[in-house]
Length: 379
Ligand SMILES: *Cc1c(COP(=O)(O)O)cnc(C)c1O
Image (tube, rainbow, N blue to C red; front, top):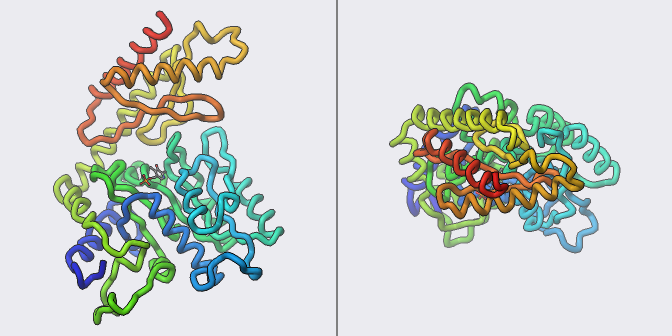
């Protein structure tokens, strides 16, 4: 709750998140705070964005006010549903979230973003936050951060970067270019519980303006007042929870026990496995990739030649077929995959992210997938 109730828990959170910050090569200005999930972190970041807009919403609320403009938040149509949930909770509303279209690689179209903002501003709507994603949930696409940050600065909106899954890849030098521009963000979320080998739940919100986050959430009744307020960090001031779990311990333990090199090497391996499998799918005439593979997630579908000609509604036939295929794969009990839909096409998703996963596991998955596909189409 307070520094005073457990100084070590508070201070270890500062140590562990600071280590992680250095591993991700983020500048020293970013302060980390641990939450349960990225969904909470994004909610808090958007609350900070709302606070930064100086509309006295914290004091006066939203309802019944005639002096307030409509508020708008922008994210791509591929952004995680937690963005929309946060908009619901914060009184921005589902209509307050503008979903920007994406290009053929599922990245936010910056021109569409700028046009949407211009149109909103002309209509008296206030842009408060832009949320690009590095590693979207469906395809792990990467929004063009640098260009988005320029738009963000121009309209003085808060820049929150969702790197819940892919943030882990910033621990590898040769992947850093994918994150160019995230150092300009006001806040960033990275989940050690996704791809940094820390058990659920552990999500880190890095904030370059932690004082704004504090302004949004700090509220100290008498029974929580302590004499060390001016020089101690009280983690209750950075979110809605008062009591909190000692999540810093497992993050600290993971980094201590594995070491930064082993962590980044494991992630590097995962990415290389993904590219090896990508190559196998690319040369297989019965399967096709549905999205680029920037990290360790592949989206593909079974597209047998027998179905390729003369089918009036090929996509819907393939959607059914791949749904059945996924069911069979998971019934095997050997591997567990899930699915997504991209522009109406059903895709099977395979993600590599466990510390113990080897190429043999990935290869086995590919064998199972091919075997079940052949069984299904009677080849
Ligand atoms: C998984 C994911 C989330 C949600 O993470 P939780 O910690 O489960 O809330 C948000 N954004 C992205 C890009 C994700 O991949």
